[in-house]
Length: 88
Image (tube, helix red, strand yellow):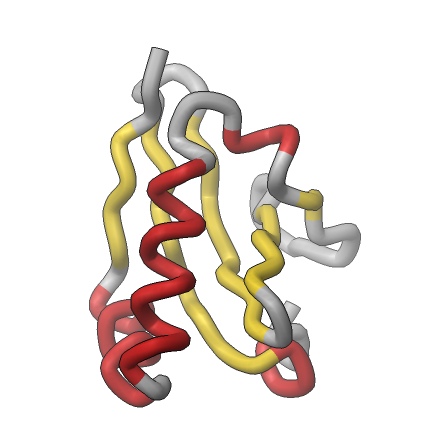
C-alpha cells in the first residue's frame, strides 16, 4: 500500500527558501518513496522522540516521521546536509 505524504509548515517554508529546481527534486523524490519508505530512509540515531528518518536527495536532506498504522509520511524539515542535523 502507498503512504500519504504531508508537509509541516516548517517543511513548506524550507522548500520555498530553496532554489526551485532543488525543491522540485526533493518533492519528486519523496513522492517516489511512498510505496516503501523504509528502504530509502535512514533512521536518525540521536532522536529524542520516537524514531525520525532522513531521506537523502543530493546534498539536501528531508527529516521525516513515518507512521506505520496510519500509512503517513510527515516531512518535518528540509535543508542542506550541513545544517539540518544540528537539532537532532
